Image 1 (cartoon, rainbow, N blue to C red):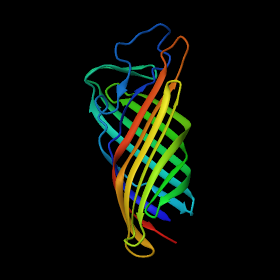
Image 2 (cartoon, rainbow, N blue to C red):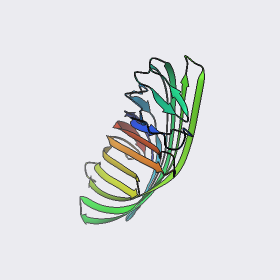
Image 3 (cartoon, helix red, strand yellow):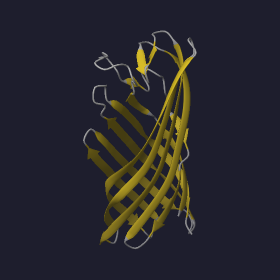
Image 4 (cartoon, rainbow, N blue to C red):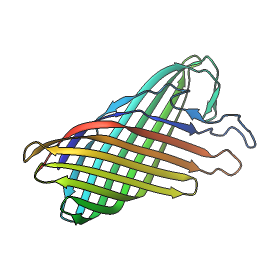
Length: 235
């Protein structure tokens, strides 16, 4: 099954990437908020995916990318990668986010209309951020890559006679201070034998923490959630 969706997401989160600001330096509010400080807003993206559905096993692959650029005037001073950005400075920010995910799920039929499943999701995430102080012509950038495995539980409701289904899945992992959670609620209807439509709500919430001995920890929190709708083709 091939699928394409329009995902209207509301990116949010905080970043704390201070760079080499010096050991022992303490900031009152070191985290930069993507919405409140930098002005990121809702964004429409189009993820593409493939699903292979067997009698007891389900495979899913998806490619999602989001790029957004915003300009804003800072209402407070912030620090990013060792650079100080002052109050009232005009800054141009860019966020580039990519998630390549795959999952395998084993399902058990508990009734003619319902199955339950368990499995694992693996996400390969790449996050790139750039903040440019237009007032002073100063720029700082950072890129982080990480692999996220999450355990998954799911419930699938289906009515073959009416060609409709409801799929609910939730995934989670926590390791030290880093964690990730994913969720999806989806309703689909096969209009014909080969074409269908679906809609739902989804969540990807990632918190990445890297401890740095005498320096403040690196922290990256990105959350994408929102409603989506799309079509699928069955072969």
